[in-house]
Amino acid sequence: MRPSRSITIKDSIIIGGRNIESTGDADTTEFKSDMEEANQGLELLHKLKKMRIEEKAGYQQIENEAKMAEAKIELMRIEAQNTGERRD
Image 1 (cartoon, helix red, strand yellow):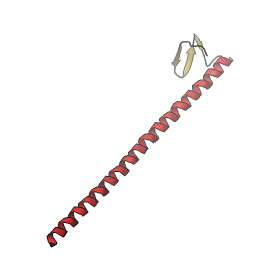
Image 2 (cartoon, one colour; image 1 turned 90 degrees about the horizontal axis):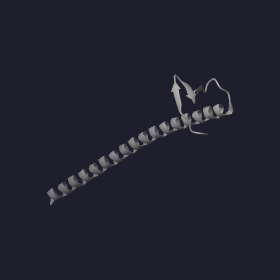
Image 3 (cartoon, rainbow, N blue to C red; image 1 turned 120 degrees about the vertical axis):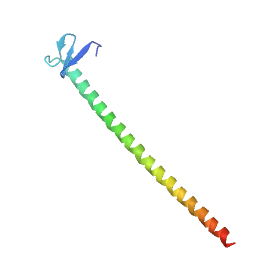
Image 4 (tube, rainbow, N blue to C red; image 1 turned 90 degrees about the vertical axis):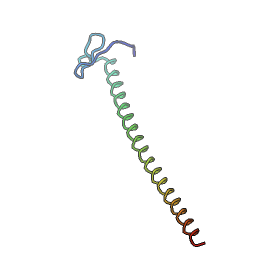
C-alpha cells in the first residue's frame, strides 16, 4: 500500500481527494479491511491492558494479605515470647 495523505470527516475517509466510501476499487476494499483489522487490534490491546491492570491489583491484594499474615504471626511470636519470659 502506498503512503498518501488521508483525513477522516464524520466517519468518511478521504484519500488523495477522493472519498473512500464512494469508490469501490480493490485498493479501497483492502484499505477498509486493513482499517477494520487495525481497529480490532486496538480493541484487543485495550482489553489486554485492562486485564493486566486488574491482575496487578489482584496480585497486590494477595501480597498485602501475605504481609498482614506475616505481621500477625510475628506479633503472636513476640507475645508468646513475652509470656514465656514472665513465667521464668
